[in-house]
Image 1: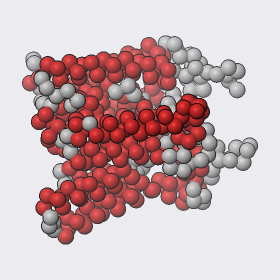
Image 2: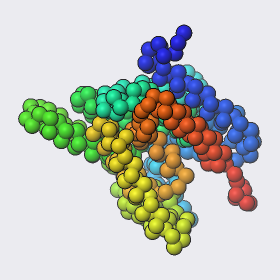
Image 3: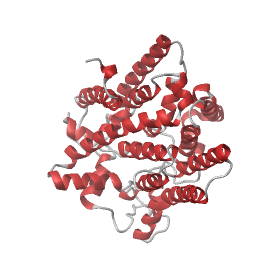
Image 4: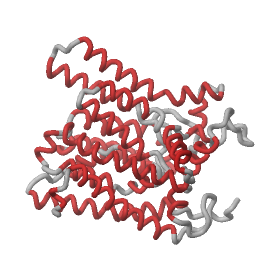
Amino acid sequence: MNPRRWPWWVQCLAVYAGARVFSGIALLVVAAHQVENGWTGEHPGYADYTGLMWDATWYRQIAEGGYPSTLPVGADGQVAQNAWAFFPLFPLIVRAVMTVTGGSWAMVAPTVALLLGAAAMPVIHRLVERGAPRAVAARPGLPLATVLLVSVFPTSVVLQVGYTESLALLLIALTLLAIVTRHYGWAVAGVLALGLTRAVALPIAAVVLVHAWLRWREHRALPTRTWLAVAGLALASVISGVLWPLLCGWVTGVPDAYLQTQGAWRGSRDIAPFGAWGYILPFWFGSAWPLIGLGVIALLVVVLAAPSTRRLGGELWTWGAAYSVYLCAAIEPGSSLARFLLLAFPLGAATVGVLPRPRWAARAWTGAVVVVMLGLQVVWLWQIWRFVPPSGWPP
């Protein structure tokens, strides 16, 4: 049977499945070279390597034991690393599945993540189709090609480990699709759920504002109920962006518990917007850091101003722009940055659309990008996911 004749959603799932098989094989190869560490033994199996490594163990702790009622403090008197840095919705979902099936965290968490990622792919396809009609007209096949690029992204391996990326990807895509199709009630539900999944809800507010402006420009006059619905969605986005920090402060009795906890993971406890770049870039690049910083800004401007990016619909372009700026403001640049970029998936559509015509050239370009991404995925697994204990380990 010709795969091109399969239903569109089957094609999405087939692309995703093929990419996950590649990642699964790569994980097993890398695991064969993994030494004993704080999470797994030497040469761990697939379940342990995807369910226990790195932050997955924090989510396991939340699923099995919940959050501490007070903030732990280290010998230096500062708040220590603790579970409040990690959002609750994904571990709660996994815990529910564990209760029903009797499965262990290491078996259930990667499986749930894998299935959530699969659910996200048809939503992304539909979002690109409905939200970026100019881009789709310029590059036929763009929705499925976007699914392909998301599926093979260098850090897409996290779509099958015990992390929250799969759930966040699904909720972002669902929320953006609901906005584009003007189902504001569903968008409110999606963005509130996102606020309990990852700290990425605030950029949705920018998408809502652009959406409101586009609707006003199109019609000039809209029913009052429409404006109220859009205003409610904007408010929900802002509330969702601060929901988890407020809950952390309420439970622990420390108003800035979440921010203090985030500071425990940083090289400096400075959590001012964009502040981390001020000490990371000089540490990495010495006196050349201002030029590197300007280069990062210039690259972001070039990407957002590229014709293929501007052909995206207003909502998709705004998410790519707002989320990218938000990342720069909120995180400490490091190994996690590439993982966070997975959620800027509309930029994958822009990458596919760089060379829209002729058809053979478009396909060759997409194929070349896929090959590069798969190669970088192996590099990321080997360099980042594989833990190399420092000298003197264990401490």
